[in-house]
Length: 80
Image 1 (cartoon, rainbow, N blue to C red):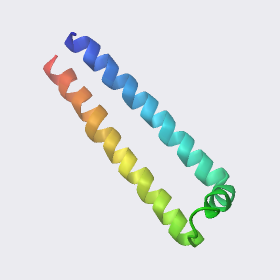
Image 2: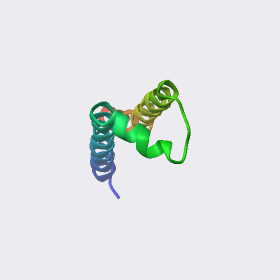
Image 3: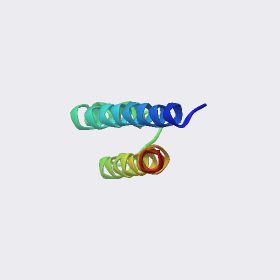
Image 4: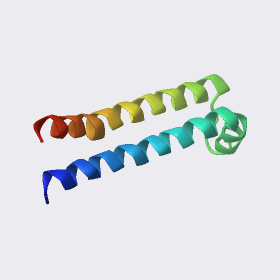
């Protein structure tokens, strides 16, 4: 496996992860009430706490994309 292959794979992983993050954000912002009702069947959370959990989850997911996809990709671009 070459450095170019790893670099391309990291870039595609970042693109796919950002697409998932965008989908999550759109679902949460456009259908947040439906999501709260749907998940409310199993977890009885107030709306404010449900929003905070999703916001924190999106933030952690975004940080993970930076740490595990974009930073290694940038490092390989610099070195390569």
